[in-house]
Amino acid sequence: RHARRCSQVQVAANRQAHKEEAGAFLQELVELKQTRDQEVDCLKREAEETRQTREEEVCAVRQKLDELRQARILEVDTLRHARRCSQVQVAANRQAHKEEAGAFLQELVELKQTRDQEVDCLKREAEETRQTREEEVCAVRQKLDELRQARILEVDTLRHARRCS
Image (tube, rainbow, N blue to C red; front, side, top):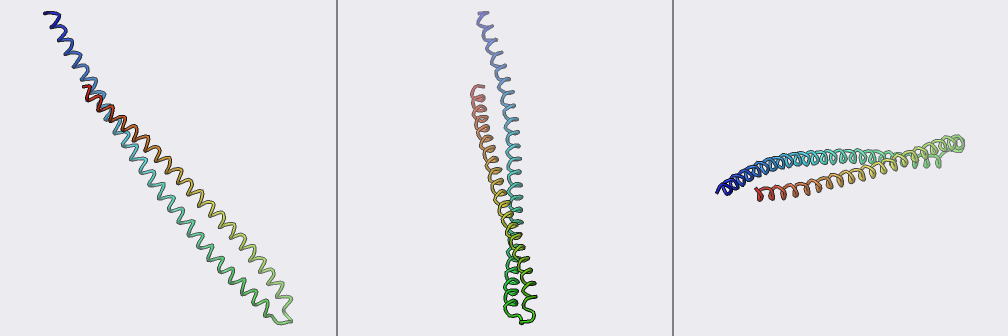
């Protein structure tokens, strides 16, 4: 009888200790879940800020490209006008005007080449920006997937701990 009573007391003590351990473990899991939720929220905010920044950069690049297109149109119109003028000149001023027109046309050609280089550079920057944004979005998605997997594991562990307790 004494042994049976001692064993029942021991079982009750073990049960109480297990409940306390399970309760502490559950509390720790809840805190871990809250931390993960905060990390997920932070990552979502960072992803949104990154997306907005990239959209602003793309908008700025597009605006610059539009400005360069307008400048090119003006250059072409000026070039055509210069060509027409050079074809219609009077005989006495033809040579001098041709030299001036040639220098002007050369300057326009160089300006066009410079603009073309700027456009190419802006296109490369836009592509790099797009690729960087895609890489950042991919990294955020991967982190979110990892956090989802961790959350699933936490929930499964929490359920197991509740079943055990």
